[in-house]
Length: 286
Length: 348
Image 1: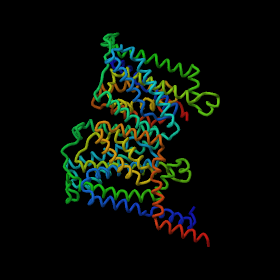
Image 2: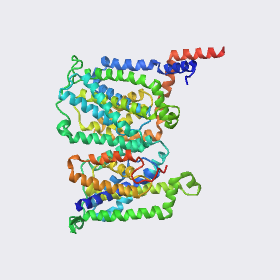
Image 3: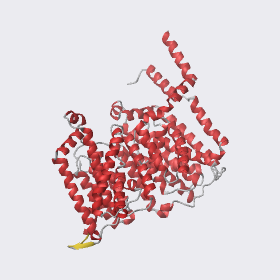
Image 4: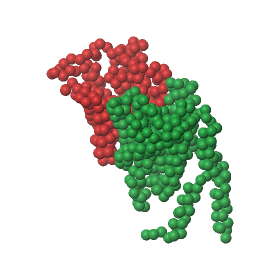
């Protein structure tokens, strides 16, 4: 029972790291980015290639996955995304779906369509028992890393100069740029950081979620659930939502395996009808 | 308050002018029906174009006319598809036309129920809810394997001859005639629908829901109505697929199908009835060409087309039809006669 809770928390934490970048682009910048999973996939494949083919240690490959995805993010943001920010939602949806299709086919072409795994060091494998709870070492690592990241994110958003600039730019773009904030740069950096986090999450998730070229399509709905159910006015909303989703999904698959993802989708629809702005948001911010 | 009779007459005239048949439309349908005799070798792909065109027409009704973005329109398509296949497999309704109607009504019922989910919320909520409904149905079809065949698809379906006389053949001759006739009939109904006062009120809701309700249009009721009708259209499109292929699989619910559909509509241009049909023609031939070129990786090119369309600008993409439309306007002799009459009456 508690083991399931533990696994669920690890899964939820992982989802949060994967989706937190989306929470920023979608929630704060009001941009529907369905291609978010593609950055996560990029991070995952970077880790797989580094660890399996080049023999880089697993832990050392994680920051590299972050960097590669972040670089990819900033390049795409500066060249393509920046033209689509101001367009209607339909255009954003079409554009990002197009990117997803392209990334899926391109990865399929380069890496093959079968599922891949990364070799993780033996010290991270297996589990030990604390107070009767089976604690997987790898899952513990995920919880630690993701927990630190969450605290860090909250700190950056609420207590640093960059965080206040970002919040200002989101609240009112025109006034923020009038005050001398370079809104474009703030958005570009945020986008890159979010993509990097997705890449890191993808790298961490290779072991738990599995990785194949259809990854962005398979998990798109999960990322969207985290953001829409969590609400987009803060970072704690998506965090709680991903924990709920993680625990719910793991418990659901354990106790009622015949229903599959049925429970999750139903809950999502009910929540969205009940509170279109998300579970944990204050009154609509815009 | 009753508006003065002159206003009513002007409005009626304006509406009927809107609904008048254009010569090019007649040419379009003549060409489509002529293909039954002139292009017997390409009936298979033409069949696909016919049901895809109907499916895109259905999305156009809610996206182009009512402004609802849907990422899960495949839900109704798949529902109709499975209904038709199950009706035929268990020999509940043997006659394809009746089964088609039944599938359409089944999808309409589903559309009516789920329409209340898209009334509230922003674009994003609608995206999520429509996507969620499609995923839910896919999951259901997967779980009830004893009924639907699960991941293997529903096999062993035998479709009886249409009207008891025309048997489906492997070259798609019957299939094309059947699909095209259904498409034409449903197109006529949709044409009547969007050119009616109801259709105009939809456009006003799309433009500004708040103002529409201020001038006395019940926004929610209109959206429910058009969503239900569109669901029925999508269901019939799905049923056509199931009947012409005698098969239904989980793939009918897939996200790719909804996404491809958006592309079809965007290529042709949303907001006029021929958009979906023209888009279907272009999309199918493009898909045919690209998948022959690179069988496994053609989604890449589909994605590229989407990205390019958005970056260039949707309005500019569809403006390639503008010169044709100008020529078409000249061709319309009745319209020019009207203009002459109007200008001469003004000069008096």
